Length: 438
Image 1 (cartoon, helix red, strand yellow):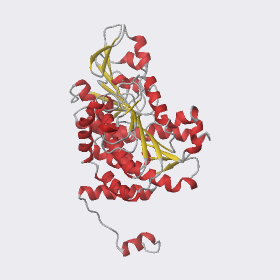
Image 2 (tube, rainbow, N blue to C red; image 1 turned 90 degrees about the horizontal axis):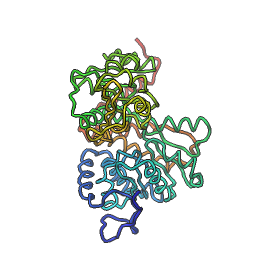
Image 3 (cartoon, rainbow, N blue to C red; image 1 turned 180 degrees about the horizontal axis):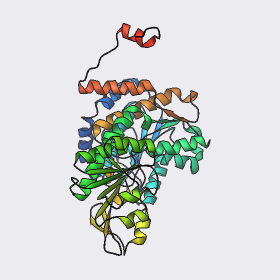
Image 4 (cartoon, one colour; image 1 turned 120 degrees about the vertical axis):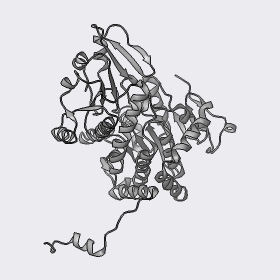
């Protein structure tokens, strides 16, 4: 594990009074990271407009936030926005393989953000980075998978009395938090950013769809056209992935446990079948369910030679890799970056991408900035909302207020140069009346 260090003030620009603590791979990457951050900002006009307002109003003044998010160029622009609002931000990675090391370096070197993240960090380092971030005693948490909230509630309960609230970015994290709230153990209010329409309609569908295909192709350089592509789960992420795989010419198979989603996938023109059946025909497999052991030993045993298996769900539990290791001969062999080959007793080979972690961030760059613009606008405005309303909120999981969702959509349309109609007074009266009919 690398050692937490302090930066000399003479090497920094845009820095607060004291240099931030950090644990990043290599500060010499900072200039490249800054260029990447600036490139992403070009596609994030909504967040930029919020940052300009925050700079003037300082609505987050006095707050300290620990953000456990994917350390990408888009996330860096969120950190800049929160800082502009007066918030002290400390950032750590929400996945061991999703960090962009040049961005992490730039956040420390150029933007004065205490950052603890190294791509490829082992499990111990991953959790040590979260603990290092929590040493800053936050009164706000910003999660992507609820790991920070989980550690606070189990190992760092002394921090709770100082925390006013938090936000959560992912479907998986919201599921965990709602379970905590249901069990009565959630100790402070959380806004479920994932549930905002400007998040899951766009980030989950278009962002996950494009970036997952991007990750699979970068890792393998295998043609998708004509292949059978199995999508496990038909939520918003699965819908986006199935749509993009179909667009690349693949024959898409969907597996589901929900009758309504399975029916929707069928009506959308996809083959729907159980995983046990899909395992026999699939060339590519990608899990996007948020649950564990979606692809298990019996499925691996049925797969054909050369099957490529990946995951786009938040945690690396959707693919039961230990069960594959048990039926494989010898140790896996890395045949390409982020591609591990497992050889079965009969000679069949199965390829696991990115150790079963988020393939769109493991071998690619994650969601395009233009969709993260809306997701991170939700994060910034939800932080402002929580700061204003924390005293009146209960220890529960809340949706993003509709007015925030609508305002983000309005700002996005404005940035795209798209105009829409408004209701006339007569139309408003008609919609509010029950007297008028045929």
